[in-house]
Image (cartoon, rainbow, N blue to C red):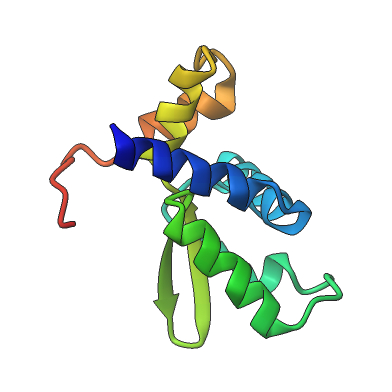
Length: 118
């Protein structure tokens, strides 16, 4: 229970930053429009932001640590996806029904094998 509470605090802290919240919303929108398979290239999403690469990497690490996103490095690119476990938990926590098309699409795209490696 205490670990869950600490994770929730980290998630709220992560989302209290305007850039991280904007980034998460862009990832959700990208997945809704293009599907989860390809993921979101962070480099492309933040190309027009006036923030240095080191700051963006810092934001990504915080969001990944808070389990808001899953990150994969492909060469020199960072590919991010919404962490579906966290997304689903927060929807239940705030009594959000997955009636919206994008929420249903995200949850349907969850891999059938739910075996955890962590």
